[in-house]
Image 1: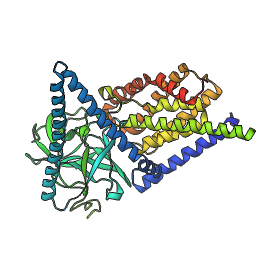
Image 2: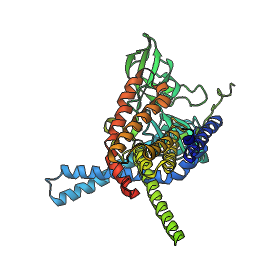
Image 3: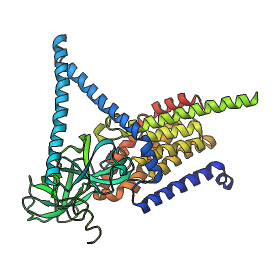
Length: 285
Length: 174
């Protein structure tokens, strides 16, 4: 047995695991959320990830095309061609319309809050290993992105930056239990916080726990960020209250909040890299 | 003459290992890119685990460990929950698969299915315990059974295909 532990393979295994743990410790101390090795790997594999995402998007459109073609089996070839052409144009139109509405909304945010510093980012990939929602964006330290930067889509909050590398960042979305933000309900002005559900089943739903029985928070109420804590600016929309439920752990109630955007479906987002009041409470001022 | 044969063997080994590294990279991209691989009812397939088990079985402990490390670093780089869990777990998976084939087990499809299923269960359970349990709170059991056990079962469906691919690339029968 002792001879087994002296073999080259076991020694190598020990060294590798020790090095990995050391990397993890360095990342924890540096508060970057990524070990130096991970940072290097993300940097190297980013083009490949972009390529596979493009391939996935292409295949998605490819399947849609065939589904439509099957539905039109009985039509003649000329009509099929015309419909396919129209569909192509319509898809382009929808894409342009969607992009335009996002940019219009973004312009509104920019005009309302001239202090915001933005950078636009594309979704590189999604973390499929975890039950909780997180996405990888293609902007990182080189674009001024920092840990805890808010990520928005139009006026809606997507989440906050969890970890950052030179050319990418990981975003913890509002449905992740690790996410937490101070919020208020716009009708009743009731203050609370939002976080993700423990089971993480739906990616665009979060909850506002700790409500009293006579709480003014009701279905249809809009939940916005409160802007305290120095990490999130005020008045970003978290979502709309879709249901009030009773907590299983205690006697309090919670509001189920549905985001106005489908976080699973977004292809791009904006990262707010700076705003007035950022970090004030962090520094204890 | 001997040195020529040695050079030729080294070249063949290198080409084979480059092919395996490419397979791991492609598997990672398929696994981690939304929309490239079906996720029935939102259940993801952890394809890299059986890939590393089969690689360890054919390449034995040291290369298995290195390939496991490579796959683990790729996963860790894109994970919000873990700093080095995947690297450590897949390095150990590659090492243990290799050493078990060297010392104890026969290299065949049945063994690969058995080792992969055990690895998937241990891997997913450990990931849940170390990275998810604390956040899951009261829903922990539902999350574990609904996502992680079913993910292991779903991934197990692809083990024979993965074994055959790795066996073909390795160019070995045993």
